[in-house]
Image: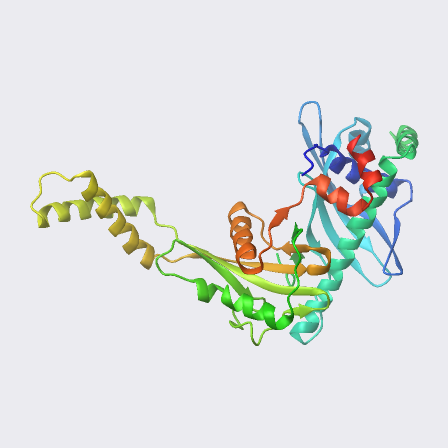
Length: 164
Length: 195
């Protein structure tokens, strides 16, 4: 059993998703269809120095100055509510840390009449979010161990400095 | 909370042992370790497997288990709690009655233990339990399961049931385990561990 504590990567993964949204790299292919992911409603930050918590709730996250300030102040993301948008479907979900997990998957209610069909439809939504989670986490980890990670941070810092 | 709820919350657990049962075997095992089969009126805590459609279908024989690559069933967990204040009031009354009936002026340590056990058994039998239904989504191919409730008590009960019924040990996933599975590359994982 591996004991090393890599929990800081949980926060960085959420930061990665948020950065991808801001720099327009938030498209993902799942089951041969394209989806976009974006923050929705609430992002929770915590300061690594003093444990101060900041919850930012806004109907338009991309216009929220308080969030840019939190990101610029190097606060880490503890929790984020996201939306996965496809051609015919929208699914909301919450990504939490300590431990990293997906909760509160709000998928469309099944209109199927048969019980088994209802279950199958809901399982397909669940699998979609599971795929999103695994695919984006893999991309993040591969980027994190490459030199491109520092470049992404630098690009994002430049992006923030132009806004705030 | 579960698969059919407006908001789904499913927590991943994983296992390393092989899981190779056909539907008939699976249904028999789940029946053998079902809530009804393991239930005892004397116990404070009762738990066992139930069909996913529970309580509409109580038997696994006529319940759907397979949904594509997923196996879906549930666990019922009942816990009886005795109100501490009520227990103390009854305890005092019972001690008094015991002393009168046995013409004793003092109670020995053994008498007190006897009265306590008698009262606990009596109150446990009549106590109404708090019931929790946990949905279990098993994906044998990935050696993973998703559960709709993740508390220490539920995890312990589930671990016990999985070990007894299927001879598999389940674990909660750490970030390192998660990264290892997602990357599926020892060399990349080594680099993650250097971070």
